[in-house]
Length: 369
Image 1 (tube, rainbow, N blue to C red):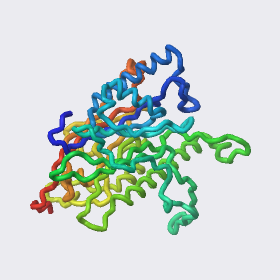
Image 2: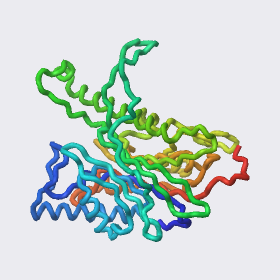
Image 3: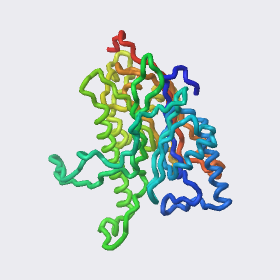
Image 4: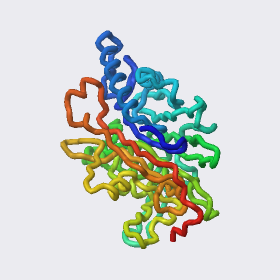
């Protein structure tokens, strides 16, 4: 999509479905693409499909999940003739069952990087986000200890400085995430087995999975609080969260991450004038604008789910007094989820999401109240 202004921004999220070079390992229960002529042909088909989606997205900033090989992502950008147009932040997976997230940011019109120094992965929860002997004082009155202290897939953080000097747009903090899935956790059955595994193995594995995802969502929210909340009411902190959050928009985990900002739905309302820590879902922004809209990015047992999200801070919300960009549109590319022939092409099992924002700061002379 062509930009009307060099300060316009578009964001996308793309689950790559185990993008790995032939012979490379992914999950212990997932056979790799073999390093044989047939396997290399399968890899080339997957690279071709992935490259076509990159061209289709045409986004300034793209967050990726389920990447196992940095060179495979480079192959996809090369096949799309885009490798020289983007800066990639990617790394190989450190072992079996540990896929990585990655980021691609389009270079400016002069071929310069728009990524500020210091980008990198965040493996651990904030040091003070600990659940050690918490005691409820109402109702159950039980003691709670949770020892989970790191993300199952490290979060990638980067600051994007888009083009333009008069005025110069603020830097945007981008977080690429892939939270724990709703699938059963893989637990050790080594002896002696915990009683729960002996009696309720399936239930226990699913419960552990949900506990980890909730803890990861809470830790992400703690990270965001550290950069979004401002003592100065006029200060801004543009923030975008991209990724496979593995839950629906209205889920407990996603509402925890978003901090549930208020959306303005009537003209005289003051809702949305400010939300220092809130993140707005582009799905919701599109729904308020469209008479009919269906949003799903994953199909499991014939159930359509919204697992992949783009969340933006108040600097991207039309009604905020701190607005810097206005929401133009959101698109979900998910036709491949319903057509079996795409499986042979190495298509992702997730839909791709893109959101576009126009540079449009709130005029200082307007009384938004």
